[in-house]
Image (cartoon, rainbow over all chains, first blue to last red):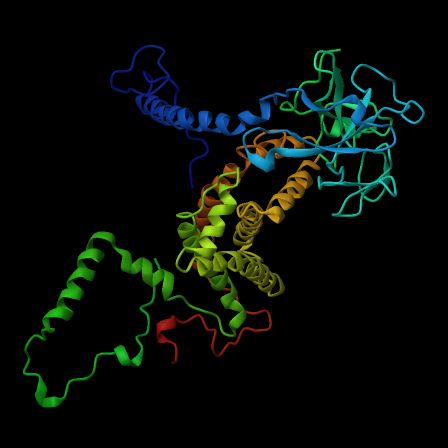
Length: 226
Length: 271
């Protein structure tokens, strides 16, 4: 049993009669050696761990670059029917980098969201807002239908049934004056009032508290300038 | 310090008593080839002291009443080894090329490589077998109450291994890179993103960007064949160490038997 009344060792090396001690010194050689050896090990480990970690995490902070992609002449699109267009999100990886946009002309009678320079044409993403399967437009029913879990969207891309948590994502559209072609810009997400948000993953509601639970990502393409 | 008991030798290995007129007090010598084998083992053992460790690992006391359900852990281990070995050799032919090369390389393994279909199928079906076995093993441990003191940490490591095994299933599913792989991964990553606050960034990390991109497949490949297997091998080692250290628990229906479970030394026990 240790003696609880034992006198505490002085923190000064001089008081402890250590060889080479000098006035006011508190760090012993043993302590110094421990700090230096372990510190050097930690620095060496950090020297390869931190760059590797940054290397793996960097894509989270790298903004996607988006170029406007022409999809056709304005006369190709009507306000009562969606035209299916294949566009490329990630160049250089073949079909895995492609996605589908459903494009039509804006119909002021049903498209009640405020009009600006980027929505004269309505371009819906085919990515289902449940878990990201590709939805298919069925003209007879004027519905978008998802094959995976039965999500259904109406003609404007609003949720009409099933598990999706928000309306279909959209693309910014513009009419290029010099070429006369309709072009698709970056993707954006919308809430149930069709307000624009930066792109979110499917399955993330952005109404009410959802927009705070699922913050904007750092790697999605910037919206076009207003 | 308690000594590890010497293992009882099976009858076939016990030294035979000498016949009366056979031995005139000379030192017995082994025939040369047998002698060489013993020298090698002795040489290794003198330098590594492995044999006490092997005795500690292999000649353990096992409680009465153990049954076939106790083999599920080893079965899971062998399923893991099967995945490791077949996976290493699949990696010799597989190419994580997102522009179509991945699918072509898997097709090449199945159609052209000698025994390619077998090795691929061993890996593919072995994955399901491992998941089934790991759950059966977990059920055995749970229903036998074998997770209780002092084996809680063994259970916790086992749960981490279960999660890593499921992560292996998820990352491996993408590698054949057909339609099913691609869309299952899209759905899986989006389920990931459903976690509040960190979910979207976890999915960004998995995809290597905001969308399925050029490096997503190689990311999954690296996680599938380097990151998780390394962690699993280390944790399996810790799991087995704890199993050996703490011993196997008896089935819950076995009651202490004073006639058999005395505290006398086991090597004096009646055989």
